[in-house]
Image (tube, rainbow, N blue to C red; front, side):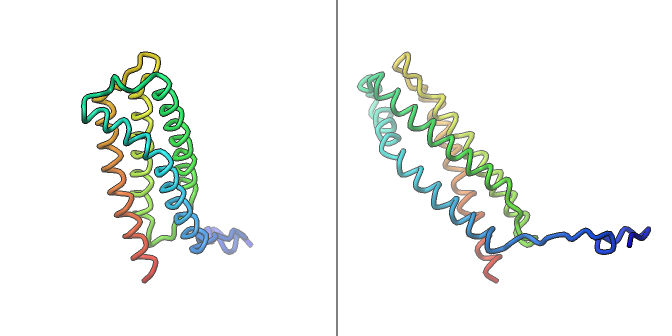
Length: 159
């Protein structure tokens, strides 16, 4: 059954094609879950953003910062699990390149989220505003790339 030409079929090896339905469904679930996690954290984010913008960070208590840091850390852990899912997917060949772009953008997003968690220092009742602002910018840029990638992927897969 084996020949010197290395024909996979003759060796009994069957290469499975990626399951398009599973891939699309998983990406859709990740996008939906990601939006839900973001919505859970948005109120706390807005509280810190407003305190930074109005230069009233001192009004935030240690307890508030501790709770917000825990919330952000939990959300970041959820994003890390989503990234692991994205990394484990087998995309169809026609979206392989855009999938890699999505994967990198999501990794950048997770890194930005972790930096935002790190910017909160409740023990000192401090927010590292420079790191917070940098992380926000990184997340915004990654979100733009994620949105572009999802739109592009949808267009390619619906052809």
